[in-house]
Amino acid sequence: MFLKPGCGRMKRIFTVLLAFLELILCMVPLAAEEEEVLDENGLPIIENCTGAYLYNFENDQILFAKGETERIYPTATAKIMAGIVSIEQLGNNLTQSVLITEEMLKASGGIKMGLTAGEIVTVEQLLYAALVNNANDAVIALAYTAAGSVEDFVALMNEKATQLGAYDTHYTNPMGLHSDSMVTTIADTAIIARHAYTIPLFMEIVSTPKYVMEATNQSDYRNLYNRNSLISKFYNSGYFYKRAIGMNAGSTSQGGYCICAVAEDPASGLTYLAIVMGGKEVEGEIYSYANAIRLFDWAFESFTYIEVLRQDKIVCELPVNLSSALDYVTLVPETSITVYLPTSTIVSEDIRYSYNTYEDSLNAPISAGQTAGTITVLMGDRILGSCNLITTSSVTRSEFLYFLARIREFSKGRFFKATLISIIVFSIAYVFIKAGWREHRMRKRSRNINNRPY
Image (tube, rainbow, N blue to C red):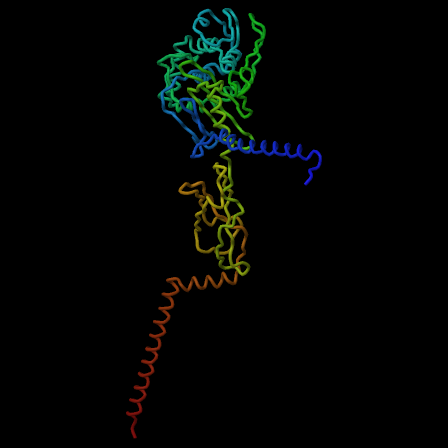
């Protein structure tokens, strides 16, 4: 057998390609295994942190909670409460001028924006600097402006926490700097964050990627970038999340990395709050951000609104009386029912219905949309919703059938029965009386005949 020229070379190339394909196929399962982000219960794998929390605003549902009652240090999330109190006290006068003093600057520490003594700024500028850039000198200036001192401002923060029901939270400063006695829980942080979400000005500020602060009497304009890397790429571009709309991120050596973030998807109409506390940095990966993104991705992929009852679903038929046009009328739901459920839900398999009608049949005339019963939608033992059952069409009444029905109805009444009995009694009495009178006349006539003279 003779090989054509170049055949051996082609064979070697083919062998190499096969080996390469086998290598790729062997690597695929490993890659899939590395990308595994859910545990055996279908929940996101959250690691290298103290705890985490995920909440859906529209449906008031906690979807994930880990270590939510453990006492932790609030770190930068203290600024969420500082923002709430500042807006409550100063939000109606954003243009108010604030004179920065040496006392304010001495009370601040950590991250600063570079305010100077004698500088005049506005409340609005301080709010943006504090909540966008985490600037502690701006936070302290707000505290002095809102309450007269840091101590009195912190008292307002603790009072607000109690008012909201965050009973395991205690603040000692508004900046989030470490203090052994300043503690909170993830559950409390969620309470505070959910309240902050209801404040339009707060959300407007914390969703700002970059704030350009106008020049003051002692400074040129400043570019203040959001320190929440889900919102801004300035400090770390690796965690930008296009659905994120705020709130706060930071860290301390004692409390680790923390994030309290909100993300929304306008297409689905869903908004989530994710909190990760005590995050670690492992091999360059900041797990407060990594876990928050994992929670958000899981929520947006795993839950949606599903129509579990269609408005045009024919539920049952009811017999119709007094009509010569239709023998029955169909019943459908008055409204459709859409529920927030896992995307894995199969309506035909997982959803069941229970309904009842007010009557076994309906009497004409019937109008379209007439309420005739109720239907309840269930998933397991959980009631997903309920609504009225209504008729789909109008049905006219046959006057002849109605007349006959009235006669039948009248014949079943007590008055008719009493009248009938009375007639029968009187008839019988009449017969007896008439028979008696006839007998009497015959006897009288017989006596008269017998008494005649012959």
